[in-house]
Length: 346
Image (cartoon, rainbow, N blue to C red; front, side):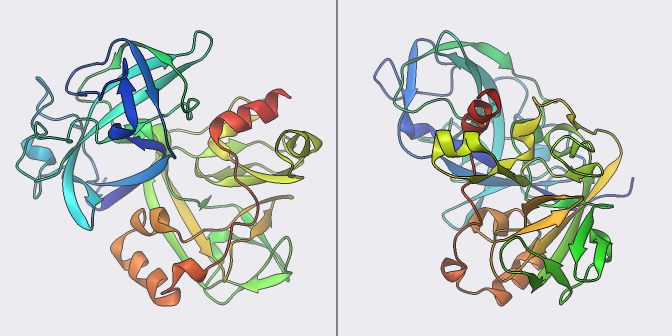
C-alpha cells in the first residue's frame, strides 16, 4: 500500500509488573504465572512506536527472550517504547488470564529491553508493563491465574491497546455556521462546545492507519445514543453521557465513556478493513463538541497524547502549550472500563 511511516499505539489499562505479586512474592514474567495473583497501586500508560507493516511482535519466536532482528533499532519493523526519556526496544511476550471466579481478564505481558542489548533477560525487563485489554481488574484483590491464551508471532501490539482520541473522516462537527466535515476544519475555525459556546481550534492533525484490531474505528449507529447519523470515532474517543445512573453510581450527572467500552451496547460495533483517517481537534481547554447530535471530547494534550502522535505533531502541540500542567482539567470524569460496564448494567 505504500505505507512505511511509524505507527503509534497508545495503551491505557496498564500497570508495571513490579506492582504485582504471585503467592505473595514478586513475579518473574519470563514464565507464565500460576497461583494467586494480585496487584496494587494506580494504573499508568505507555506508547509503542512501530514501523508500519510489522508482522512479528513477540521476539525471536522460540522462547521470546530475544528481540527479533526485524524489531530492533533499524529493523524493518522496529518497535520501541520510551522509558525515562530513552527509546527502548520492546516486545509483546504472551497473554495469560486472571479470574475472580466470575469475571476473567486477559493480561498482556510486555517486555522492555531496558539496556537495548537485544534480549529481555536482564532484571526488571520481563513483564515491565502489564496490559489489561478487557479493562482493569480490581486492585488489592486475590485473583487466580489461568493459562496462556496468546503466544504467537502474529498477534500485534494493537490487539492489546488503543489509540489517541480522534474523529474519523466524514464526521460532522457543529460550528456557528452549521455542521462541517472534520476533514474540512482548519486551525482557527470555530466549533461549538458544550459549556463555553464557540471556541477556536488551536491545532488539528490527522493520522491514517489500517482499520484492524484495536485501531479499527467504533461506529455508534444512528439513534443509539440519540445521534441522528452514524458517529465513527477511534476506540479511545470518549462520549459524554448524561444519565441518572451515573449520578447514582458515581455522583456525577455527566460522565465520559470511551467508545470501546460501549461495544456491548446494541448499535455499537467495530468497522474493520481498509484504511481509516483519524482527525485530532485541540482547543484551548478540554471540551466536548457536538457531532451528529451527541457530545464527545476533544483532544486532551497529556503525556500519553504527546507520545502517541508523530514527532512533528508533538512539536507543534508543545509549541502551542509549553506548560501542559496549566492546560486544565478534563471536561468531565472519564469512566474506566469496569465502571462503564456497571453503568450499562444498572
